[in-house]
View 1 (tube, rainbow, N blue to C red):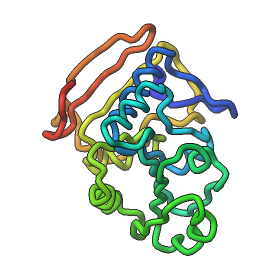
View 2: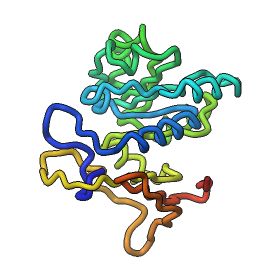
View 3: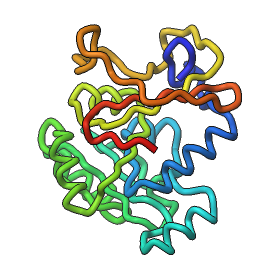
Length: 218
């Protein structure tokens, strides 16, 4: 996020907050995960690939008996997602779409050929999503955004670790998306999150917070 807490600016083109060294760090983190989750808004706005960039890391996963790329996961209420998005089109790996009960039928028609559609309740229940992922063998899930997903996972107390990278500039535009929106978070003045690490990566800084007793330090 920017110094003032934004994930992007209000322009159409995506704002690059990080640097090459941190993008490579994120690739390393992805390579150690079983699945990567983003919200449907992120798919619509950023069209992410959500794949491992490094050929060496892909090969290391294959050597461990894993697919070269983690499972791709999204959560949506309306399922208004383009089936041609790179989330679906790229990567020989399963794609899971958890959607609200009322949207399952339309989601199956729209995305059934490119993804597995899963009823996640109405409204979508993230605890149910997590339980279903666990049943599918997912032990480490990386939630990459956007702000709505950050807010939902954090307010529900489902995150074990927060990795927050701060870019050295301000966005200064309230129209832009923030890291999180309003919510009832478990961590406040009376219950402070534990800072587990600080690391400078070029001109950005990585802050790691331990959010549960399941947190595992590197």
